[in-house]
Length: 137
Image (tube, rainbow, N blue to C red):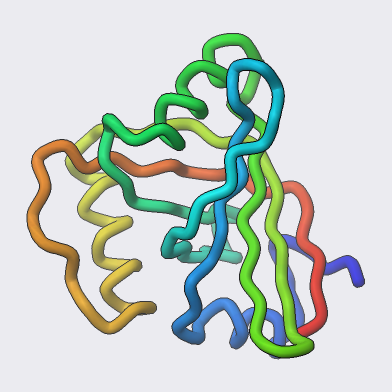
């Protein structure tokens, strides 16, 4: 079932506010998918999803490599599921390193997941400009 990225149903948005482990799929340089568990926050008003990570992680390196070769960023997807409920968000990802973006993403993560991550000077944000939402929530 398709959803409007900027105007999701209340049930879909509520599902993205619950505490769930998600997956992030990024393209490896050879084009194959790299899928890893992550925490994701969804900002429907801005049409963005955010994943905090270490700047040296494979997922960040994949996004940076694809970002360099693709206008608008790397094509990625985030997904979560619980029982019969599932939700996927797709879009173009870029890596943000500025302090304000990182602090905002950490605050959003803390709100959704109920804990503030330990300080990490190598933390970055994979910011996804969304263009597709699917799921059954």
